[in-house]
Length: 73
Image (cartoon, rainbow, N blue to C red):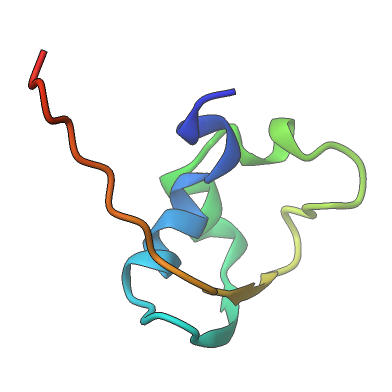
């Protein structure tokens, strides 16, 4: 599984503004979700995302890890 499959562009945008150990609840307009990530509804079929209602996202950023490529290959 790649990073793009786990963290969608909508979630990544929220995570970029968070600090370590921060909790957040965000309401994202359905039109914005469709604009940034058109495949969001296909990733989460069923009642996970309704294009008629805003998306509620609750996140808790526990820790940050730095990954560094020492060999730069």
